[in-house]
Image (cartoon, rainbow, N blue to C red; front, side, top):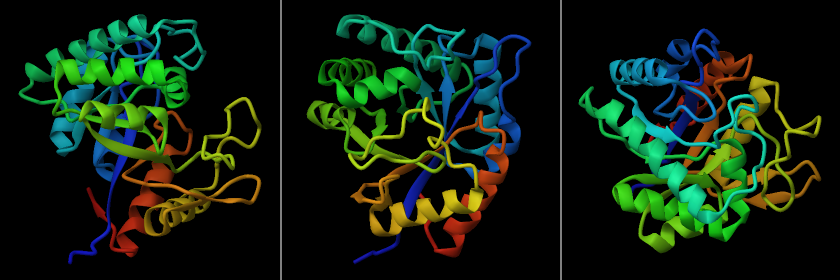
Length: 252
């Protein structure tokens, strides 16, 4: 039996827009195994999408679509009143846009990971989760669906027959029900790279995370998210990448 531990380390990239720059995509790419590229709704534009795909290809990392709400001003982090059909349509549209940009660069999309408020709403609402899973399946049933570990999105993906990756977060704190602490709360973010790396190792090796309430929560970690918009994202990436190597945890 092979007991080798593996995990995917992903990062949200391509979130610049026009002359406005978000993060240092080029610097973080050597430390991750997959990237989620904004598709022009919450961030990104055609040039940014094309350039980010080219950078990812250069570094040999897997590329995925990162669809979100059409909310540039709010960076896709504001919840919106939407129907399941509207969610289906916006996800199809955005995956299709990035897939076309990838196609002309002889790249195939590897996965889909919703962004921001859309991701969080789909984690708890079965109707939105089903709409996203259906959109992914209808476009390409070989695509992997990334979703919050143990969430409605993971259940919806499985029910459609999609391969799913349970996602955990390196730089976010957790509540005792396994959900992320809302960003509106002061203690939502982990700002110490060493603390983030320790949380990652516990989630990958032991399948556990300690909530802010001090409760140990069972969690499945197939992929770990690093936020590229974090001011210390590069240091986080280096520290976590090094810690995974120390524990002989290989890229998925």
